[in-house]
Length: 613
Image (cartoon, rainbow, N blue to C red; front, side, top):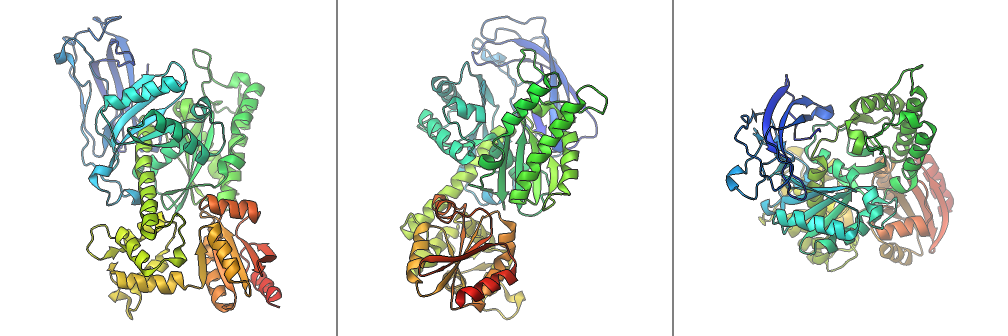
């Protein structure tokens, strides 16, 4: 069969052949001695993959615990590279009877290991960069210990088969893998939609899936901290942390395509939650693909066992399968258009998943169609393709867990510092603000750099543009050349009080804050802008909204992101019934008096004139 053994971002000029003897590891520990030969070739996304073709060895054993001998073993080929090469699932000699027979089948050198520049991995304590990544599918579980600072595998990976998807079977498999690595730390689990359904969680919402399946997996591994994510998230985190792609802008959409379809949005490298993409737009993919398969059954490949083998192959007009191929093209383009027009990403990355990962020709053709169609989207994103190499989801699960844990720890630290579960940025006392500053001050020297500030504020949900950061660093300076690279608490407090606490626009993150503002401002016109964290028109309108707030200083200007948390979702979706963003809602005496959608300044001024009269 074929094995995915190694990956790298290096691009060799020629194929690298190799030959070796090895045992194939199995979940029950029975060794099968095989002779392996193959070569490393370049795949999409700059990844290298080793295609290994096995042939029975003369001295193979059909049973027992790895009793075959390596006396006729061919020399192991040492494969070097210019950049990070990681062993994925290293084939090893397994023997319960003779320790001398245990040997690595392939030695891989990682020359010039490079640390990730991903914001959430910067300045992490070394003890917090290690995590066990686990990829869970309906028939197997794979795991490896990952150093997330550079994406390297700290040891050979391990895998075990699942006889069924019962909770007992999965719990046994997970515990065996955790025990194998003797790991008591952070565990990141990547799951499929099918796994979620098999565990009794059937929902199109990725956030709900992560949360409910996460509770189940946490009970299975009570000694570990477990963070769960769908495969799309794991693939996205892996690409953002270690990929070579040059993304346009800060808003990146990751889409996985195969039998299932998933989409996750990242803003400035952090996952945007509660977007509604998968619940409202991507939820019908499986049904529509199944209808396509019923219409064109001969065009859909099958495996030897008769199960699903991928999507239809490209075909020219007049060839067999042409109608099925054009129907698939149209389906993919429709989904990409609907999702892109909704979230307006600056970059889109397509990732084949499952059986479809080997259909390189299919996805290269689909990429061209989506790139051409993107020219007609509301906003034209840069569309790229990335093959999902072996180990991608294991690494992605590990780094995703580290990042999500860091974000949650930051929020928890913030809540502890202000002694409240509800974060009200506008109402922080000087003592609370000092506690927050100390959280940002990682080395406790009394100074905080612009990078530490940006990362810390991002974690608690306060986006700081480059202009605002320059304003912070240069406050009180006549010449920009005098601006420092770091600030002390006195400087930070002055900026916070004048720009955040007493700024022209009040940013809120909860229903409680909104109710307090309505009560406090019953004698004023209250203007509420409802947006999403990923809404590009909202973000572009922000400077104009602040300027309008200064012009209409007798009114109270407020801003909220409808997908920030459960409280804001309930307020904007259920109470205010906002359907599009940005939406501006005017209140007087606690009652709504006007609303409109869009960023036209003339429309806004006309509405203000009527409301104030």
